[in-house]
Amino acid sequence: MKHLLLLINLDDSRERLERASGQLQNAALPFMRISAFDGRKINPDDLPVYDRKKAYKYLGRGMVGGEMGCYFSHLNCAKKFLESDAEIGIVIEDDIQFEANFAELITEAVDWMNNNGHADWEILNFGNQKLKISTPLKQLSPEYGKYSLHKAHYFPMTTTGIAWSRAGAKAFIDASERIYAPVDNYLRHWQTRRDKGFSFHPPLVATTGSASEIDTNTTGMRRKNKRALNYYYAKQKRLWIDKFIAAKNKVLMRFLG
Image 1 (cartoon, rainbow, N blue to C red):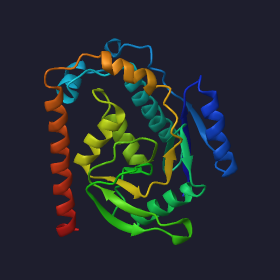
Image 2: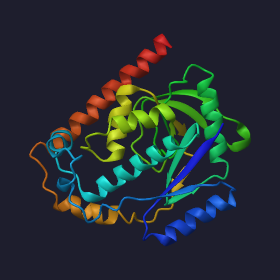
Image 3: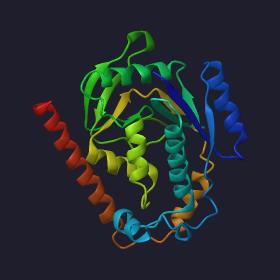
């Protein structure tokens, strides 16, 4: 099963590129570098795709440039994947540490899904540290370690490592005509409702622990970004609605299969 491995990296993050590419080369994993969209100095209000009104309604605050940049970077990866003839699009960020066999485990999981009633899968998270509201499906080959595949009803909110099906990548692009939330928030919102997301546990990859060169600036901008009066209400509302939907889908899967 052919896959395309995409590495997101800012043009000025040379050390991260060297570290990540060194790991990939040592593991004999060919990859394509995707130049990250640098949103650190942009104003989201200048971007036609940004929906400020919906952001305040959903997040209780506006988005900042770094969040827009991260979203665009993942959109670019999805588009680049669809331009290829690969069946799986694997996307990793440049602050990653991984097991050398992570690509084999992803391929094994996808092959199992395609042959066991989950061929409509859209996205597979393999960097998630915490698994919440999920259904265990398959224990993978023990030769690689104790990794299991789960249906992630409450989709993980991390983008360290994700894999797309072609249908999933297209659906993500089509759903992103207007942007109103950071990509990790949106993937949870979107996939919790579609219930076509999966996750590994434990994760196949982890972060190096070094501070994000985008998030360092983004965090400061968030502090300066004016929060709406409904900020805490909006946060709790999306949290509990997502959990309710996820729990409902878990129950339905248990009884309906």
